[in-house]
Length: 238
Image (cartoon, rainbow, N blue to C red):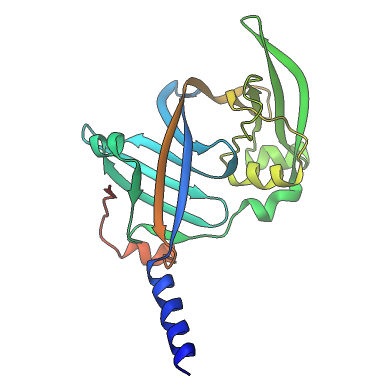
């Protein structure tokens, strides 16, 4: 009986201090351009080059802070802010559930409606890149009604051990089924509308080898409704 009690106490202790830990080994900086408005902004993504089910996006909030958004395609999201200086010097970023919640992936519901297709290699400045696209399989009429664009990926061939960076949920879910696309990080991602015009593009400006971690307690299980009733939260760093 004592052994059973000790086991239960040990299990409770482990659960109390358990945590989910995300590792990032690359930083990818993209310049995003919205063609119609000619709006340009910088997007930074921290990724794991060997595991593409999660990433951390970083956007400048103001002169002091950055907005952070962790997307775990398995159903965990963190939305918060961090001081720029703290972020640069921190190896591990930790939060305490105040801006963490679970979600159901919309990509899983639409996965059968899309597919990847490998295209002929693209030449840019005398360098050859892989080229593939993800396209909706439904009728053109449906695509026009829903304003669905086709995403094209121009992939760096010198990074064969870099798993595909599929940052939208539908891309990730289809990628799990269509395993025919090549490895490598995207040099360029652009979206083509149903009328053949370019909608937007993400152009890689810099890739950087890094080593950072983000941790969240395993008990984080907030819903979107609960998040709305919570005060703003700032990450701590160690």
